[in-house]
Length: 458
Ligand SMILES: Cc1cc2nc3c(=O)[nH]c(=O)nc-3n(C[C@H](O)[C@H](O)[C@H](O)COP(=O)(O)OP(=O)(O)OC[C@H]3O[C@@H](n4cnc5c(N)ncnc54)[C@H](O)[C@@H]3O)c2cc1C
Image (cartoon, rainbow, N blue to C red; front, side, top):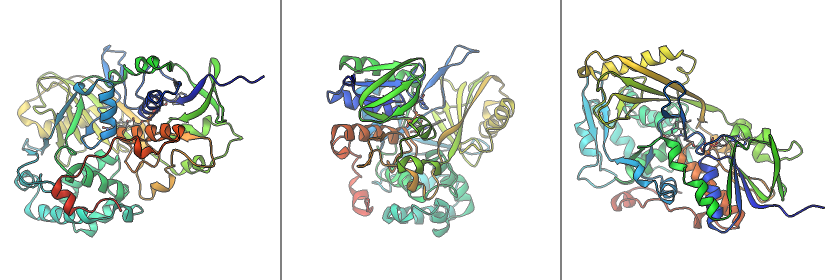
C-alpha cells in the first residue's frame, strides 16, 4: 500500500537557491524538507573552519550590489541586514600606490560617476573619451541582441583603447561575470554596467558581509521549523525520482517522499542524481555548460597594509582586495577567471598576490606574511560565455514534473547569489502555481534621468 508523501515539497541542496525555495514554500504554508549533504547552509557562498588555525574562513569573499534586491530581501528576512557593510565608494589602486576614489557625485545617474571618473589618474583623456562613448551606447543598447556575441566584440565596436580595456572594463567584467571580456557573453556584462553602475547610486553600492558567510544563514532552520518544515544536514541525495510524488533516495538514511521535488544542486550534479529512466531535454542541455574558477587568498600580514575597506588593483593579476580587520593586516585577495592560477602551488599563489600588494602599497614598507591560505574553487560558477543562454534551463517546464533551481538557470543574471535566490523563488512559485513575477522582490527603479535616457529591457 502506498502512503501519502510526508512532505508537500522536498528541496535538494541547501545553497542560496535551495534556501530561498524552502523559505518561500514554508511562508506559503507548505511543509517542506530541505536536504543538504554538508553540515552547513550556503553552498558555494559559505564558510568553513580552517583546521590549522580554527578560524572560520569564507570559501571566498562574496560581495553583493545594491541592485541585488532578492538576495537583500532574503538577508532582511533572516534578520542579518546589519551584518553587511555598505559603501558607495570604490578605491582603484595603481602600482606605485596612487589611489583613485570612484564614487557618485553631484550629477544625476547615469552620469553620477562622471566627476570622480574624469579626475581618475589611472586612465588618460583618450581612454575616458572612449569609455564615455561606450557608456552612451550601453544606455541605448538592447542586451538581448548581443547574447551570442562577446563583450570584447562590443568593446572593439566602440573603439576602446587597450589601456581602457585592461584597466577599467576587464576588472569589472571579470569580477562580475567570472569570465574575461573575450569569453563573456555581452548581454550579461552589459547587464552589470547598465543595472549596476548606470541605473543609480544605490544600485551600484557594494555590500560586504562582516561575518563569516555561514553565519548569515544560521536562522534558516529555526524559521523553517516554526512552519512545520525541516532542514536535514548530512543528507546526501543519491537517486531522485521526480514523481509526482517524488522519491529522494539518501545515502545512509531512509528515502524521503514528497509531492514535489526542487533540485537546487550545482548544474554538474543534476544529471547524475536523476533516475536514469527520467528524461528531460533541459537536463540534457546542461552538458553544454562549462565551469570557470575563482581563487580566494586569506592573508595575515605583520603590519597594516590595506588602508581602505576594499580595493581594485589596476591592471594587476590580483583583482580585488578586502580588509578583514580594522587596520588592514588581515586581507583577503580575490582572483576571478583564475584559470592560470589554480594549478599553482600555495606558495606560488601567495607570492604572486604579495608581489601585487607590494607594488600597489609601497608605503606599507617591507611587510611579511605571517600566514596565508589560498582557497581554490575550480567549479566556482558556470562560464558565462556568448550563447550560454541556450543551455540555461527554465526552472519549470509544462511537460516535466522536475523543478530546477540554481544560479545556472535562466535568470538573466550572471552566476550570482542574486540569481540563485531568484531561481529558488521562481521554483517555489511553480510549486504554488503562481506567477514568479508576483513573488520576486521588484528591481530597483532606475533613477529618473537614467530612466529617461536608458532603454529598458526589450
Ligand atoms: C569563490 C566564489 C566567489 C564568488 N563570489 C561571488 C560574489 O562575490 N557575489 C555573488 O553574488 N556571487 C558570487 N559567487 C557565486 C555564488 O556563490 C553562487 O552563484 C551561488 O552561491 C550559487 O548558489 P546555488 O544555490 O545555485 O548553488 P550552490 O551554492 O552550489 O548550492 C548547492 C547545494 O547543494 C548541495 N548538494 C550538492 N549535491 C548534493 C546532494 N547530492 N545531496 C544533497 N545536497 C547536495 C551542496 O552542498 C550545496 O550546498 C561566487 C562563487 C564562488 C565559488
